Length: 204
Image (cartoon, rainbow, N blue to C red):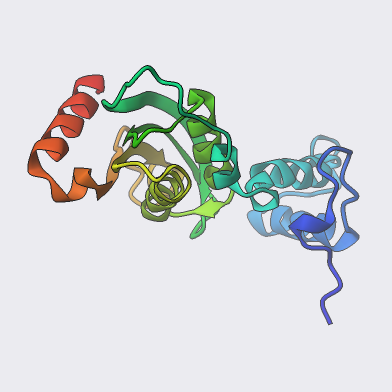
């Protein structure tokens, strides 16, 4: 029976209690890599790694879409595209646990309600703080905005570099991956799609 606490069992507001089996697993990985976990420079590394991974996985302890719960409808009749450009984020790929580092652009066409711009960034960083693939991250951010704000259209574009490609395997440095997700009028209406893509590409 697995008795190891899951992510939600930890109080992230305090120093986490790290199960001994987690620390030993990291020590085993250090040995597997060819080093000695008992040497001075590595002695405290298992604890540091464990605490870092609790931080990397903080997105499991929240509902990222919940950041969009508070909206505003006093916008002076504004009904054009709202776009937040070049939001930096870091995630980790679920295949190699390697870093994914990039930026996202999130746009929506409001239908009477808007949200504070920092909340869009919080949705992104909430989903990014989980083990991810870029395609799913893109879709999750777009779907959260669509479900919570009920806008006329949503567009998300993410560009990122993947440590599993730059630091191992093919070691292709400087290569980035771009993904996008369109919903509503940005998917169905060619003119709206062209307008939002033009704004997104201008940002790049």
